[in-house]
Length: 365
Image 1 (tube, rainbow, N blue to C red):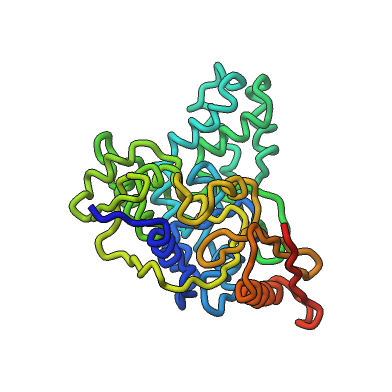
Image 2: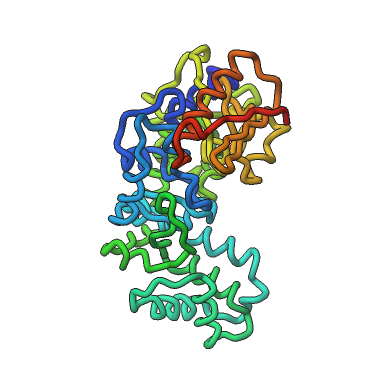
C-alpha cells in the first residue's frame, strides 16, 4: 500500500481546500465544495473565502445570506457553520443525535426529568410566529414551563432538538448583530429532510464523499473529527468500491476518492492567511499534515494563522488597519517578503481606508 508522507498529504489538503491555487468559482459553489465553513466568529468566513477565491467580493457572500441561499447553523461538531441551504436541510437530521448528546454531556443533571419531546414541541411553538429570538430569550420563555433547569440549559437543548438558523444581520460583511434564531424550515420555506430508516445511511455516505473531496486522503478518525459523528465507518464500508487506500507514516489507513487531486509533494505552496477555527486545520484528528504538534493548541484557541510552504508558521491579528504577523519559527528573507506581500493584500481587503494608511508589521513571537 502506498505510503503518503506529511508533505504529500499537505499538498493534497491545500489542493482540496482551494489553498494551493485561488479558485475561480462562484461563492456558493465554494461553500458547497468545502462542506461549509466554520463560522462561530461571524466575520471569519470572509477571510477564509478571500484566501481561497480569486477576486472574492464579500458582498456576494452577504447577498447569499440575506437571500437565504446560505445559512448559519449549528451542525458539525455542534459548532456554527456557514452552509449552503441544500446541505443544511439534507444533513441536519443525520447530526440530530450528536447535537443532543453534546448538550446532554454538559447539562444532563439540569435537564433530568424534562421530557425532551415536550421541550422540542414547546420550542417549535414559541418560534412558530416567525419572530427570531436569541438563545437566552428562548431559554427564558421555556423556563416558564420548566423553571428548574435554568434558561441556559433549556435554550441550548432547544437549539439541539429543533433545527434553527441564525438570521442576518448576523454574519453579514462589516455588520454587527447578536445571534437571533429562526426555524430553519420556515426561514428557507422547505422542510428539513427526515431521518433515514434504521440500517440505511445514505446521508452518511454523502458526508464521507463530500469530506474526502474537500479534505482527503484521510482516516475515518479524521472524518469523525470533522463531523462529530460516530458510525460513519459503516458508510465508508458501503462505498468502499469507490475508494482507494493509502497509509500515512504513522501507519494509519487512509481512504480517498479515486479521481481526487493528489499533487506532486514538491508543488510550491503560496503564503495563505487563514481565519480563526478554519476547517483546513480543525477538520482532522491528526493535524500533523498542516500544523506541528507543538502548535496544535493554536487551532482550538481561536488564533488566526499564516501558512508558509503549506504549514502553520505564524499567527496574525489586525487592529486599526494594521496586520501584525508573529512568526512561530524563523522566516527566510523570501518568506518574510511573501508574508508581507500577502499581509498587505489582506490589510487592504479588511480595511476601508486608503492603501497608504495600511501597513503590515512583522515581529518575532
